[in-house]
Image (cartoon, rainbow, N blue to C red; front, side, top):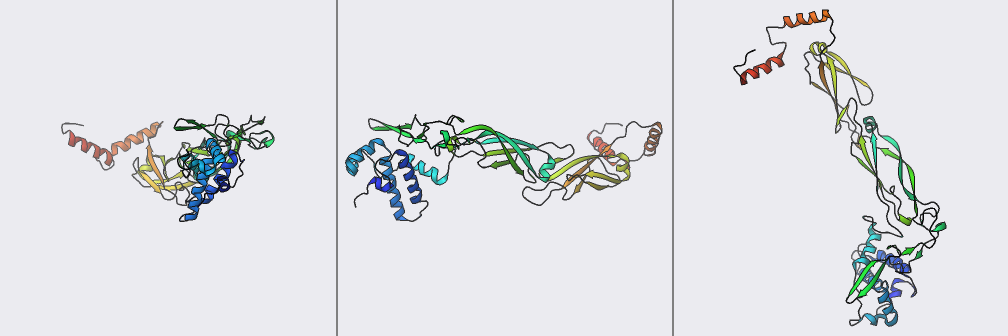
Amino acid sequence: MAKRDYYEVLGVKRGADGQELKSAYRKLAMQYHPDRNPGDATAETRFKEINEAYEILKDDQKRAAYDQFGHAAFEQGGGGRPGGFDFSSFADVFDDLFGDLSGRRRGNGHRGADLRFNLQISLEDAFHGKKAQLNVPTSVSCDACQGSGSEGGAPPGGCPTCRGSGRIRAQQGLFTLERTCPTCQGSGVVINDPCRACNGGGRQQREKSLAVNIPKGVEDGTRIRLSGEGEAGLRGAPAGDLYIFISVAQHRIFQRQGRDLYCEVPIAFTTAALGGEIEVPTIEAKRIKVQVPAGTQTGKQFRLRDRGMVELQGTRRGDMYVEVTIETPVNLTKQQQELLREFDGAGRGGDAHHPERSGFFAKVKELWSDLTE
């Protein structure tokens, strides 16, 4: 079966430049790629035919030979390699099928850089969630040229050096060397009349204002990604992403562990001894009463269910733990001092009133039997 004309295979005219060839090739390769046509033998054959045609026509030397001798130029060791599939061709298809990865070149420029923005919020904001207004210094698309880099937004022209391929090849003996085109820096196009506002880059430095929703329950170190809100790409290429790193400021009262909250509350020694009721704050800025039983010791924790933080992207809440510390009174009057001495004297001779102290010294005596009081 006779081979079809390579120009006919790609659907272009014989005088087509490199950019037209690449555009036609990408469109057809995406259409007939095996990943998009699983099990279709006709599509697979067509895909190979498209790659064979582009492999020849994208190379200036091979194309010149084909224009003069046709398919015969590559038959019986004629120097070509039709039917082959080099990695550079596949990379072009891969970019279009699966998107831009790791900042690879796309279109007329380079993908914009990803940006990082550090945002500190309060623990209350983390509990309730909030809408934050950010002012991010970044590069944005030039308004004057609509990001094209050309004065007045005119489309760029094809690179005369590489004929739109973005690469140039040189034959050295048995080897063919390929490198990025120095004229267009691999973009395949050149700006003949650069935009005066952006000097042909297609972007300008500016502060961008963004409204960001901080979800309820967000934790310290959470990262929020805003796709396409990073630095604008060069000459119309895709923009990068903006990553917002959340830090939650230390709270004056509460400490957070996951969904649970902890707070330390000082209480009078009389309340600890006799029992009573205390009021403690909650993260919702409310008050809640806690019953303290008689004989409470420092370090005792009280668990308040469902008074902690809301879980991220959920409805469940953690718990709140109140730990009491017994405060020693200061600046006592003489009468108060006498009453305390009277209380202390009444309690001597027995350990029933001070179980923690008596237990400690009992352990000490077990370790060092020769200690005396």
